[in-house]
Image 1: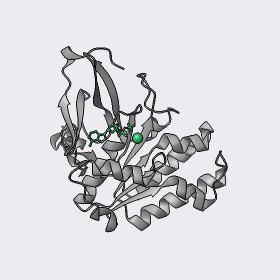
Image 2: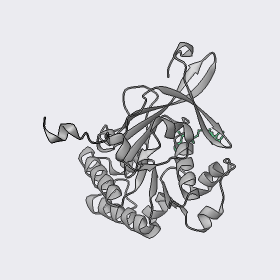
Image 3: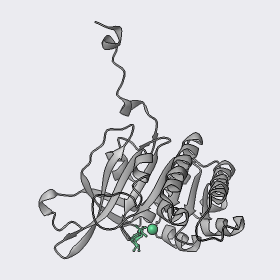
Image 4: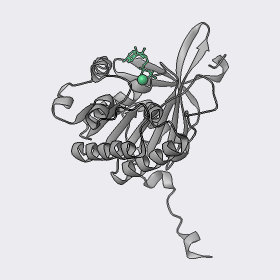
Length: 259
Ligand SMILES: Nc1ncnc2c1ncn2[C@@H]1O[C@H](COP(=O)(O)OP(=O)(O)O)[C@@H](O)[C@H]1O
Ligand SMILES: [Mg+2]
């Protein structure tokens, strides 16, 4: 018998260190959290809770001493602050101490003089360099980009978006960041991103959605893929509460009219 067969190596899911999202239900699905250093797409249509989930991920991280960076393309930081205050565990001191940093990407565009509707190759380079500098300056361990779709709108050409995504994900993994990239998609099932390249480049995909049930619309969450862990692909109902996102199994019998 070959030696390797006599000493089985532990399954990959038990050896990767975890980044606990702090959302207990999600950590349970992921056997303790996202494998550290993974880049994960958080995909969903408008109002499904992408921003709320990613903010909780960063606040929970900052609370336990992990430096956290939110790059906001779509919402101004005042709006995000409002969103964060709806969590009763949010402490504004995390921002003051630099443990949690919010960056308005449109302000970055303005500082870099990126005024053209479509970013050229040099401008994409400048944007990546700025993101890299921010990762170094903030020493970020957790990163959110909300949204990767909006960054893509300014890049426009498919081949440049592909190149940008590859360079961005390499940079994030070189810095050892655990990252959530928000992907804005339509309500129809079957795709996790606008360009189709995002879900190929990332290590994981978490899908948020709405399902209709007896006149109500429920928010649901499903882990589609996550490298480095075995996980359930079941659908969970998400409730947003002042103590954070709560997940409960979505009973199949009660399901109808998925959006
Ligand atoms: N802590 C909370 N408790 C209850 N509702 C919340 C909370 N945080 C956000 N919401 C509501 O959830 C909705 C969707 O949130 P959001 O994360 O902005 O969705 P998305 O980013 O997917 O468009 C918003 O209408 C917001 O008012
Ligand atoms: Mg949002």
